[in-house]
Structure formats: structure tokens, C-alpha cells
Image (cartoon, rainbow, N blue to C red; front, side, top):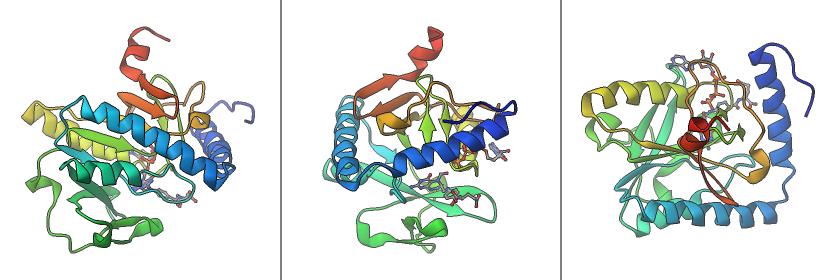
Length: 213
Ligand SMILES: Nc1nc2c(c(=O)[nH]1)N(C=O)[C@@H](CNc1ccc(C(=O)N[C@@H](CCC(=O)O)C(=O)O)cc1)CN2
Ligand SMILES: Nc1ncnc2c1ncn2[C@@H]1O[C@H](COP(=O)(O)OP(=O)(O)OP(=O)(O)O)[C@@H](O)[C@H]1O
């Protein structure tokens, strides 16, 4: 990693580049092995939580491969929602997906539900769990994404709805252990994770924040 600059925006940019490079250096076979470990920890966590609906993401570039987690959720009869990026507004719409065949390459080449996918979040049960991608995380639940704020905006939207419905989804960051850093610089709008899952297991970020560690 390079030395710290004074401004959070500069530090984020530096960390983004370093984290993307570190993740990209993982050979594919290791990435697959670590991904299945992370997915196994995540599935175990879900089994204990009575999850009916979850929001997942389909990996791109050298991201952790979440596909075993999605396939496992289908097998368990969970409703799996996947996001579709709406570039014009910076928002994401959420759609139930039942098979890989329903996906098409969308913005940034990420596999997403097709644009004409009928169901939207408004008419759906809210996700009980949200799996969040990221370039880097810290143990307190700090997260660094690609810098477009999609998940921060989703959080803001869901928080407004939660105030009406009284139900908060569990936010879970998924990452390789090498993506966990000492501290991610966080702005006011940045959403903290509740849990972070790596190949080493589950980190309760809420507890880490409470105990100031
Ligand atoms: N698998 C997956 N799906 C996801 C996300 C993710 O991180 N992973 N996102 C999480 O938010 C959203 C997509 N966000 C993205 C934001 C920026 C870039 C991107 O290519 N950025 C340029 C930086 C320059 C620029 O801003 O154009 C780059 O990285 O080269 C890609 C995806 C929604 N879906
Ligand atoms: N709730 C929000 N409403 C409007 N704009 C927001 C909101 N949250 C974040 N933004 C904007 O999004 C931009 C990117 O934020 P940030 O650098 O934290 O992205 P990120 O979390 O790394 O990216 P991503 O979530 O796409 O992976 C910032 O310019 C920020 O002002």
C-alpha cells in the first residue's frame, strides 16, 4: 500500500487501486477455493437466520465467486433478488431471479436481470439479507466499493422504507481475507456492514464497532 494522503477522497482512490491490484493477483484456482469457503460460511450463517429473501450479486472481474451461494439459496427455496444498475439515476432496481438463463450482460458487463424483468422491489418482499461486494473492508464494517455509491444509495432507500415497515435487512460484506484492511476511510453517506464474511469465518462488525476495536 502507498502512504496515506490527507483527503479521504485521495485515500479512497489509493486504496481502491491497491485493493483491486491485490485481489487481481490471486490465481484463479485459489480464488475458486477461497470463494467456496466464503460461500460455505455464508450458507451456514443463512441456515441459522430464517432467511426467506436475499439480495445477492453476480461476480465480475476478479471478485469472489458468489455463484455457489446463489445456487444453494435456490436449492433451499429462498427468493434470490439480483440488482440491475440504472446508470441514469445511479440507483439499482431489484429483481427476483430463478436461473442463470434469466441474466444478460448489463452496465459494466456485469450479468444482471434483463431490463424487461417484470418485478421490481416495490412489489416484492424486502430482502432479509443483503450480500455486498467490495474492493476492501475493515473489521468495523467499513466498505470501499468502485466509487459510484450504488450500495450507499440502496441503503438510503431501504432505510427510508424500513422506517415505515420496521424491518432492517442484515448487510453482509463478502471478501477474501486479503481484502480486509486496517481501516477504510468512511464518509457520512457510506453504509457500514453488519457482518463481514471471509474464508476465515464470520466477523460481527456491529460488535467490533460497539467495543471500539
Ligand atoms: N458484481 C458486482 N455487481 C455490482 C457492483 C459490484 O461492485 N460488483 N456494484 C457496486 O457498486 C454495482 C456496479 N458498480 C460499478 C461501479 C463502477 C464500475 C467501474 O468500472 N468503474 C471504473 C472506475 C471509473 C469510472 O467510475 O468509470 C473502474 O473500476 O475502472 C463498475 C461497477 C452494481 N453491481
Ligand atoms: N445516499 C446517497 N445519495 C446520493 N448520492 C450518494 C449517496 N451515497 C453516496 N452517494 C455518492 O456516491 C458517490 C460515491 O460514493 P463512494 O465513494 O462512497 O462509493 P462506493 O461505496 O465506493 O461505491 P459503490 O457502492 O458503487 O461500490 C459519491 O460521490 C457520493 O456523493
